[in-house]
Image 1 (spheres, rainbow, N blue to C red):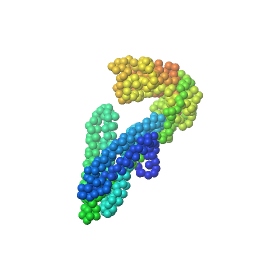
Image 2 (cartoon, rainbow, N blue to C red):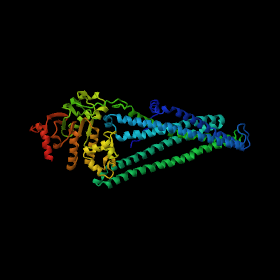
Image 3 (cartoon, rainbow, N blue to C red):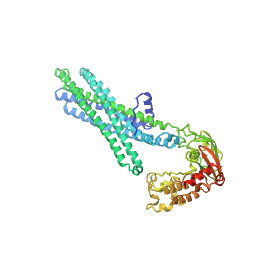
Image 4 (cartoon, rainbow, N blue to C red):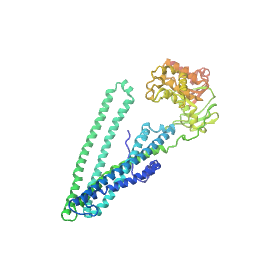
Amino acid sequence: MSKEKKKRLDRESLQKLGGIFNYVWPYKGKFIVGLVLLFISSSVFMVFPYVSGKLIDLAQGSQNWFIDNIGNATLFLLGILFIQSIVSFFRVILFAQVTENAMANVRTDLYQKLMTLPISFYDQNRAGDLISRISNDVSILQTTFSTTLAELLRQFIILITGVTLIFYLTPSLSVFMLATFPVIVIFAIIFGRFIRKQSNKTQTELANSNVIVEETIQSIQAVKSFTSELFEIARYKKAMGSVVNTALKVAWYRAAFISFIIFMLFGGIVAIMWYGARLVQHGEMTGGELIQFILYTMFIGASIAGLGDLFAQVQKAVGASERVLEVLQENPEWQPDDQIDEARLKGSIGFQNINFAYPTRPEVEVLKNVNLHIEEGQKVALVGHSGAGKSTIVQLLQRFYNPNEGEVQVAGVDIQDIHLQSLRKHIGTVPQEVILFGGTIEENIRYGKPEATKEEVIEAARKANALDFIEGFPEGMETTVGERGVKLSGGQRQRIAIARAVLKDPDILILDEATSSLDAESEHLVQQALNDLMKGRTTIIIAHRLATIRSVDKIYVLEKGDIVESGSHDELVNQTDGAYRNFIDLQLMES
């Protein structure tokens, strides 16, 4: 769990927060009305101490041109509270309408941008951090625009109005207050900041303990297979011990802080009351004016004390806006409003002089001057040891990455000139590790073609040899597969992936070691489905098993990013010292 960072409030950081304010601007009418209501609410509330003082003066027999009796003064106070409550109600509603809509737009744009960013972006950013930006960071911004900014403005209005009024109404007592009260408030702010730093240590310790929970739950099978339950329990107890120790230390500081506030802050008010009482005693001010001054002083003190927390919240919001804008300003690999060419990808595939290194490891060249050619409708296998560059070739074909040098062509056209969505729409993949979404079987198959009919989904499942096991479930197609498909076996997940590819009906098919982790029975069923799926399609197969690759039209053998051999199975297996022959011999020895 990353700790929320607070940024300095300078012109540049506030401009970044202003970048998020652009999402508020479409609702500027409601926002401006809300600000006006905020100003009215805060200004009306500042009349309360004045009328309260006049009420005391009336009780002591003083007359006032503004209010002539106690009953009217009381009704006036109730009227102030009524206006304050009504105006505050509508102000909160308006700010909520503006903020909820604006932040929903931020989240939508952020998610849309995440969906259009290239794989290289995800290689360099952790999933947890990206999820935090769309949840925690936007929540911070939501709180800032709905509450914090409004409260900050309200406190400034109270502070400025209060200071102006006390100097106007009771100048002699105001000078005494300036000599004592600010010192107390400054000490309170400094002490409060120290307490917050100590509290952050508790949050850090708690975050560390949460990491243990997250890791063990995600890897619960490993924990149980190594019988490490007691070890993990002890590790968590130790982490919680640190949390408790740190929290108790903070509690000591907080107790001292509360004691300080009770004695010093209210002691300061007592000192002001003492001096004010002397002024009343000598006839230099009335009792009502003293009450006015004390109430205004309490309002001012609360505003000053609250500004520290409010500024801290704004600093967090600036940091959150930077993290959100970092994503929003990334260059997408395609735009959602682009016109997509629906033309199918018919023709040969060619890799010409391809050199490539992953952006996260630019010093390691994964492919070195690779050239290969695949005819339309041909089945080609890529063979080689792990790290030879097989998966990289199919990733370049799908434009998950772009080559550093060279061209990838389909039907003689550089794939850089084909709209990315159109290219990927006509490429189907059956991976080794099938990722299913947590919905139903039907929803997962339909992912290959969202607009497909029920009949098309059933037919795709039948062609994938999946219909029998699906109909064996009590809920059939409506069976939920669990998170990442955990409720299904490996063979069942694989056949659902094949059904998804059947429904997609791609021109180019990629089989990435699709049967390598299956038992013999599941492999047989999956291989039957794959054979039907490959008919009439240009197919690239990444495989280790001899049974999978011996029937292909052509084999490319890769070693350390180079294509060292190519040809049919019969041609390559007869080369006694060839790389393919050595690869096959190793396979036979392992089996």
